[in-house]
Image 1: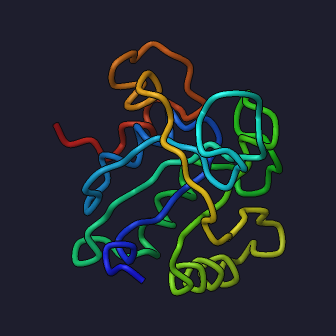
Image 2: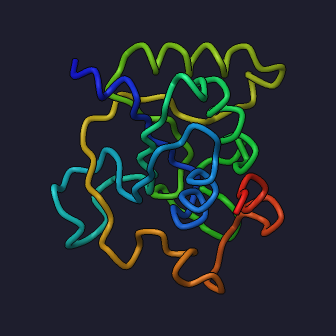
Length: 163
């Protein structure tokens, strides 16, 4: 596996606008990109093809651990909700952690299994088989259009923003 993949993980937590806005301010996050995970298409054209809205996160493991990233992610999702986060409903709003790294997936599965509520958590942990970046108007959407809808409460959305 390309060593750069060791520093990339994908989070699906409902509408990607808020997930990206939250994640990009975390310590150790180098960059984020809004996208689609594990659909069947190589483009964003056409109908829903089974994808989950997600955010690609490139991170510095010397600054932030995977378990810390999972802690942050669980702050902004309802881990017990299937195909629904806030007012967003449907399979494309499912919660999941995706990676091309089996090590990441093992760490994520272990993280969830160690939680006191593990028997209720419905967050998927899956191998990333297909990723398509979202269209430009969806990248950094809430930075560019701060009054757009977001299922994440405002005070939590910017909890880690330092500037």
